[in-house]
Image 1 (cartoon, rainbow, N blue to C red):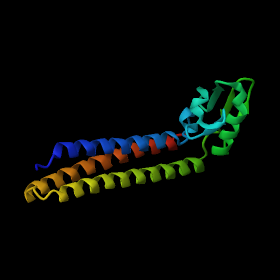
Image 2: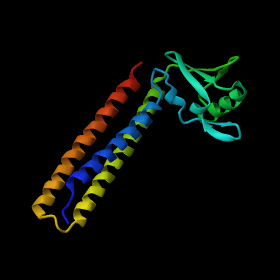
Image 3: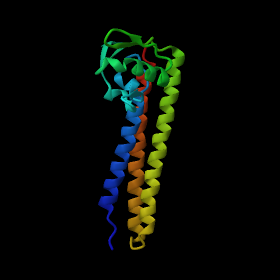
Length: 185
């Protein structure tokens, strides 16, 4: 049985893409100086007898830098949307209009920006743990295969370590960009 480096490398790259995707999704939920529909992507609404994601019940529009307009597909569930927003984001003060809900966010304070950077660092650490787990999984697969010559195994380990350094560099670059975005007034 020959060791299939190409399939291991492909899986490795796919797993890393998943780590980056999760990190970027988590970063979208952090409030910068601009509002985004991603800020409420974690909100669930009790509608029609079940819990639904807010995206399934309403349309979103950013009408100004700090104003998010939520227009329910069915105005009869507007109260449930407001309850969901207040449950998941008590810091929001939804303003109910005739057929839509407005959320006007205050500019982030120095304290809230620092808190968001701290959260971003936590997400970065989770991503780095994910990368370490990917490395461990690859190393375990290499060690399991008894038929790989020692010099070839060292070459593969070196390639994995080079990729890990690149991956960690990419994660750090994503964090640095987000940190800059969060600290910008």
